[in-house]
Image 1: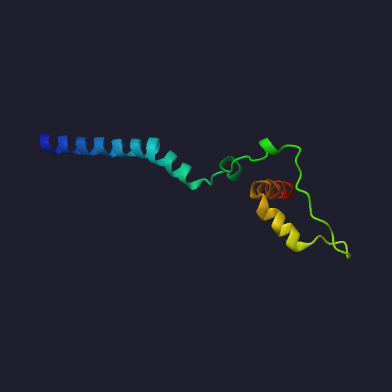
Image 2 (image 1 turned 45 degrees about the horizontal axis):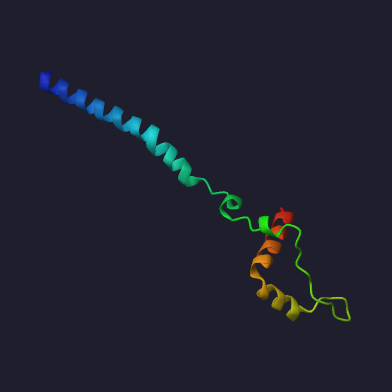
Amino acid sequence: MSQEAVVWMLRLLFALVALVVVAVTILRPLWRMLRTRPDVDLLTPDFTAGLEGEELEIPGEAEDGTPDRGAIIDKARADPRQTAVLVQRWLKERR
């Protein structure tokens, strides 16, 4: 084997080792990070901090004991932030 062939093989081996090191140290952790799903609870803002103690009052009930659907929708549209807090609490209770 000539000296040029040995140098060429050493360069090829060095490039291969460098490629493996880059793949293990950079690409593999990056791939794992991209594959994991983000925690939704950490991404949603907590609106309950300023509304502690407040409750959403359900409008009056009809004769059969069920609340008036139209009044509930109007109340929810009037205060969307408090409605969002209520829905967020319901979803946390369902888990």
